[in-house]
Each structure stands twice: as C-alpha cells, then as structure tokens.
Image (cartoon, rainbow, N blue to C red):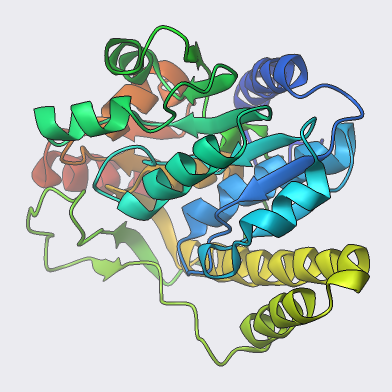
Length: 341
C-alpha cells in the first residue's frame, strides 16, 4: 500500500482501520472455506462498487477467489448451494440492506437464511436504519432461527440499533465500513475545472435540500446497459446458467466481467471527482473516496443519520474530511478549502 496523495497522518489512520476490518473478517471467514458473495451492484453507484471491490480484494489477498458470485437478476440458489456446500460462508454486500428502503437486499437475506441453515451468513458493514416500527419488526424476522449470522454494523449507532432489533442469537459486531480496506486512490494530474463540485443524491435517503446554483452539481451516472462490460456480464451469467457442467470456468467468467464493470464505474467516479478541487456531498461513500484520494471534502447529513454516524466513528479524523450541517455552511467551508487548495 502506497500513500499516493494522502497526507501521512491520514495514511496511517487508513492502515489502522484496514487492519481492524481485516481482523474481523479473518475471525469470521475460516481459511479453506468456500465463499459466496451476493448482490453484485449492476449499477453506476460508485459507493456500491467500492464495497464490492473491497471484499473482492480481501478474498483475493487473504483467502481465495469466491466460489460463487451473483447479481440479483442472476441469483441461483441451487447453483450457489452446489458451489459452496454446507461448509461455505455466504457474504452479503453492505450498505443499507435490512430495511424496506432497499427491500430487495432484505428479501435475498430472508431467502438464503431459510434455504441455507448450516452456512455461516455474514452481512458486511451496513447501516441498520429503519423507517418505522413496522420496518423494525419485519427486519427482526429476516434470518428466522438461523443461528450462525454475523451482522457487521458500520458504526456504533447502527450496532446499538441492530442489537435492539435482531434476536439474541444474531451476532452483531461493529466495524468500519469495508471501503476503509481499499488502498489510497489516484487523482488526476490536470487542473480541476471547478473550485467546488457538489455530488447530490435525489433518492429516499436524501434530505431534499436545495443546492446552491453557482457550483457544479452532479450525481453518479447510470451504468449504460449497452456498454461492453455490462454485455460481457450478461453473456457470462447466461453461459453459467446454460452450462452447469462448466460451472467453475463459467463462474470465473462472471467474476471477471464483474471486475470489468467495477473498474469502469470506479474510473468514471475518479474522473468526475477530478473535475473539482473540493467535493461537497450528502452521499456516504464519496467522502471515503475523497479521503482515499487526499481530496478536500465537506460531508452533509442524509435523512436518517447514516452519514453523521459513520463520520463520527470512522472519518472525522481524516485531515481532508469536514462536516457541515447545512448547504450554506457546506458552501462556505468548501470555498475556504478551495482557496487554500
């Protein structure tokens, strides 16, 4: 791991956090066990791909390539069970994955828990937030009576929430987000086009606040369904379904196509962030990417407190990352940072 553009003190902090997350994964993923990773992000959200890349790198460096990977469109329960057996470990990508905000993730967990009672299930670092009491009650039943489930909460607030919601037989462990296992990331060598760039989300997690009109505003672009990397993924997933006798090479093809998509999305994200000296955002993972790039960033709240909880636990000590409660405060701080930059 090399520093790239990270200040020395930030690099040292990242190494410590990487070690802490790795130690937890080492504890719960025994050597020699086959591993499945579910819910590949076939989308343009850079943060989702950062999480996928982090766990993929960990397995490649510390264990082995996964025996089964799948996007929700291609998830084949029987094929996964054949690939990993009853001793295999099943990993679910992190994020906001146990509430009805993104219900597809919760339903996959429920299905797998019912069908794989002997496999260890690990939900990678996530925010445990719930819309209301009905949402909390539904989440409590996701894993049923499965007695080997590890819920990794990516901040103490989520950890406390998970312990309140989930039954006592579900293990909850607090960990930094998996993206803090990524190495420092590169920045472009050219001159940024803008002093300030503002990455604003417009979904149900956003605050719905207005963005100042005199800055460059963007969000992560959609992943083009006709791109070469997506077409390769679709072809390899179809090949794996149609030729089960060639499962191992077919699964390797699927994994390679996923890595191609992730490289494309990550390159797109880095290029967009290169357009500004300072990033302002209310998305969680862009501020982690900014820290990895040594790029000044101002982080704003989301609707449910996710950003603040992770900032307090993991990122407030990074010298390039700053907090603001309002867009007006964020703009003022970003202008100061741009002038200093």
